[in-house]
Image: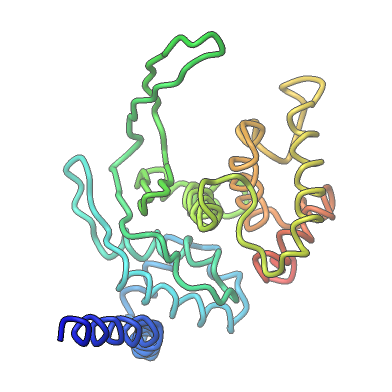
Length: 272
């Protein structure tokens, strides 16, 4: 009898695992079919001007994605902040730009979006080359954790959205990290459509990363911020900001890099 019970439970588990994706997609389909709230349209007009540049089909897709992301993810206010629909929609709109035309879901590892009123402080510990431990405090505008959380400054979120062509957007940056972290720790090599794409991705991004790190002078003009030279993961997040906000300049100055990101994101912002 115990063996039969175990077998039955195992069968139920298998059926549940097979059926869960189907049920999830059914639920998402119902959410996407709902009318987009009029109040949310006003939020997009007021807070996320980049949305107006999208072709009509991508605008519709973005609005459907916003509805799903807001329904599925927990938005949590920190340091006394009360989360509003304005915050949810403004953040979700920018985050969903990165998953337009992509089939792999709504940041499957992400559970919570933590929102602070402004920049927040985190404690950091690291050990130097001779084994000495150091403790430091950092002031941040955003952070992505592989444990399923994104942390954002609402002030910096608004600033990033308000100027859609300066190549700086904290939401795009942190959600690019989330895509990168789908394969484990962020390393600048997110999940590509085909295994054969990694060789070219590594070659192109590696060369551009090295060029940014090896600039003759730190103050030499570059399309990418110096923070992108920190490591390959930060480089991927930084170039993602520029791809969405300054596509013309990227395509002109870094055409091979632009092509890699256009293939990865399945978008061509040059035509918006």
